Image 1 (tube, rainbow, N blue to C red):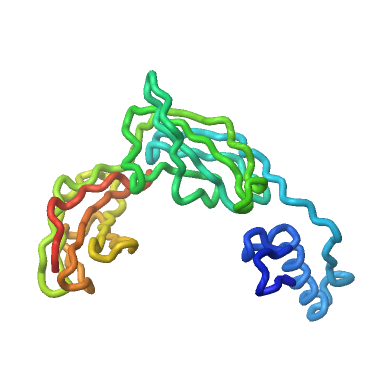
Image 2: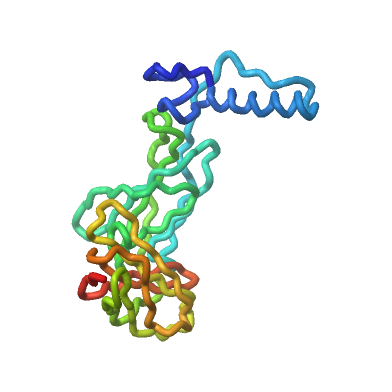
Length: 252
């Protein structure tokens, strides 16, 4: 890559680490040279051009709104060269102009679903607006303009959560979680989330169970004395529904 380890910038990386177009040419040359010399592929090893223009990001087009899956699902045409897509959304309320919310994390391909985990949205019957831009790096010139927004009304078809969730300590580092069954023929899975409230910045453990299992499961391997929050979501072909959270934390 020809980067100086002591330098603060590098001609082949847009952020000091990830390759820019010149860096991508040099990586391609390394692979191409190995293929040519070791396997005689190609008439010669490839060369890096003297001038490599910056990547130009096209604005995403063809946005389509679907409110019948997780409530807010938006797809668009792929943008060649994009590493990811920034997504912004907002709930459209009559007579107000709500600010745009930035989706976290960014979309890695040309589809985005509004996740309840970060917003506890969407709400059935509410209108939402979404816009997208293509991204090929951190610099502003490596991001496209925002697309024209697309909007629609959310009518999610994800399943309801259990009516009641209970977590009861069962011994050091163990507890039992139980829930009322969801009587829905479309159900494909329960997801049980276990979040350690005494260990900040950690992801919740997620346990998956078939809809036919007895709704009483033992969770093991936890830290004795820690406080755990437990909630359960139901899944079907449309995706994951909103959770039911146990009323009390459990301390195994």
